Image 1 (cartoon, rainbow, N blue to C red):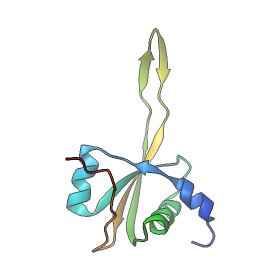
Image 2: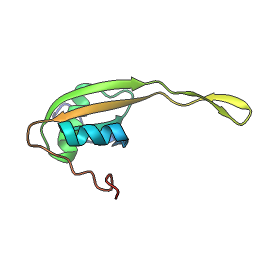
Image 3: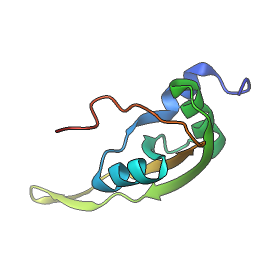
Length: 103
């Protein structure tokens, strides 16, 4: 982890990805989904989660999500491609997502 700067680690994770699927896998399997930079690697994502949340990461899976083609008024446009990471924590570890749970 010393090879990666702390500034880079702070900028790797963009935000937690909140959806029905991410909420379901968080409560069932101890996995969390994050939106990450498109140039982030698995070791960087692992180091960033361990640094920011002080937990032990078991596995990291990464998915590149293609942007959709959309109409903006009369013109056609395209949303940006983005990357998300499924992070499984070691047994007994949890991350408190403040504000993610709504009643």
